[in-house]
Image (tube, rainbow, N blue to C red; front, side, top):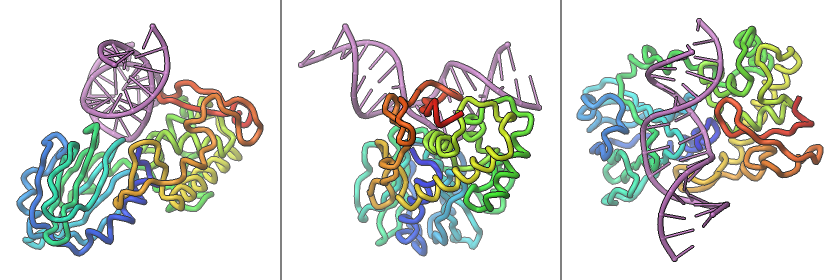
Length: 278
DNA sequence: AGCGGGACCTGTGGGC
DNA sequence: TGCCCACAGGTCCCGC
């Protein structure tokens, strides 16, 4: 399920295939997948994709439209969203929701089995007035470790929710999902059900360090492939082989050998070590 | 206001 | 063998 490291890997593998390419057609196969910007579709045709990049779990394609205006295609992959550039003439697949034709550059497919993912097309100038965008928390890898710890301290003061729910909250910190929340908390030695406002400064420091460490390592390993995730070249990631807790319920902790516990925290399947995480 | 939980989806896998 | 159901999870929305 694409979280920050997976979306980052997709962007890195997609960018060389689409940047500089001219859009010749856009086809929406599932209307629900295009959340907004229907009226801008015709403006895309003839435009050029100038940049593929990422913010939080969003994949963004900057487009210089045919009339010279700047547009943005924002994609949220949710759990099963995928990108792949097929040769020209390729027919849609079973779960293809949207196609961006790039002439001789091929056909960019947005596939999404569960149809939770979406695309929004908007003028670049309106990006900042989009509530989801405007309320996103900081990029965890774009601030220093102590800066991130201080940010968490400010955000979590007085919070009664558990720390896992806070890590999943994109307005507190951007890009973390269920996998990296569990892994980060394990790495920091903090139990997921701890009340966020009760965490001590030294624990927040450890958490900031753990989150940055886990996310960077996951990017180096090209993300985690549990079942569905593939990058824009069709390759699986490898970080799932380095999991400390996620998907390892009942198995023994790599650090202390205790049986890992599992349950629901913040409404999500959660695994933790009852000894290493306090 | 802040928080918890259901709805949205569809394929997979375990149990009977 | 085949059917049924729980489960996976990011975000929005609703109700307490």
